[in-house]
Image: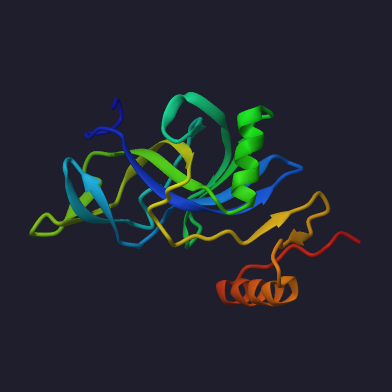
Length: 196
């Protein structure tokens, strides 16, 4: 709590991409401007994060299993607070049995992310009835991988092979590939082309 006025809080989102060869997971740790219901100090409120909430985010950030600080899985290697979707994080997962398991679970779309954060001084705006708040300035404490993401704004886009080719494992791969390309185009995302 050294840099914040409040205790550490936890919020969840979903995985964007898994790159097995590099042991990397790319995800939106916190979507911006997406209201969701969260439990806050014993009651339910509606919460969202401002696009500037993590401006200037820095420091060493660990990746843990759930929010268990004694179960590390890796570390954050890059943070992208200016991504319009939310705070994007690139995670490097350690070469351990637990790390291998979480890479597979992320690949299968079964886990998402959650963040531990602290609200900085003056970093929240409350509605007059105190039923909703917008976090405007926060410090990222850690990222946790979990099976119960609260925020639904980010989805798995693709899994990358060593050559950068997206892999889609479904019963209808061609239909799913076309849907993936259409979603990526609408979102303004360039899919990685195969290496030549």
